[in-house]
Image (tube, rainbow, N blue to C red; front, top):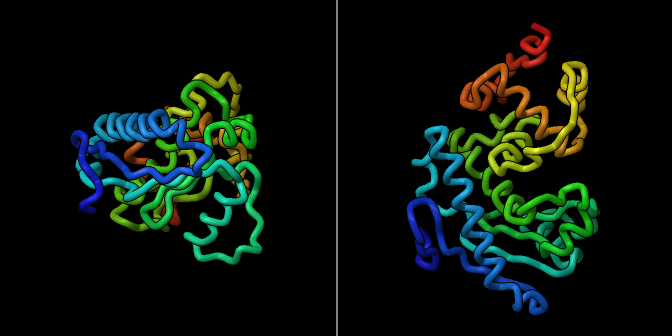
Length: 222
């Protein structure tokens, strides 16, 4: 374990936080959200028998920026892609190379108003860490995480995002989302994922999502 990462309790760590100077006044609050996000993910992992995968921190440091341009620059640097690549306005957080990075809570709400809900920024942190938990469940095989709608749905479910969304989703709507290979609405992914848990257990879905024979549409059609 990195010597700079102090365990606060089992599965929860004191992650060093780097901030834009303009965000220093929010350091205590932001640090508390990082801790609460880990506790939320730990509770989720314990519920499904994955608590043993919480023994190491998902991030060795966290960086939060008050300008989208600074965040974009850092993300492209971490992902080793050219700085000329344009990132969508709503791209607000990531966990790459053991570093959690995000825009500020205010900028997140401004650039992604569809994501505003209670504890939305804390849930954003949990979401990104949930992707890393998903990889650990699969023993490091990122290719087994399944299609976009599935691995984003997993993280949304783990972070309890949009749990009170009143969206009415029929089977045909679910199939349309599943068959669309383009990245879509996270609200729809969250609703779809919760609906799928009525047909299969989470552990079954996670174990099968990356397999060529995974055919959830057949199950939906009965």
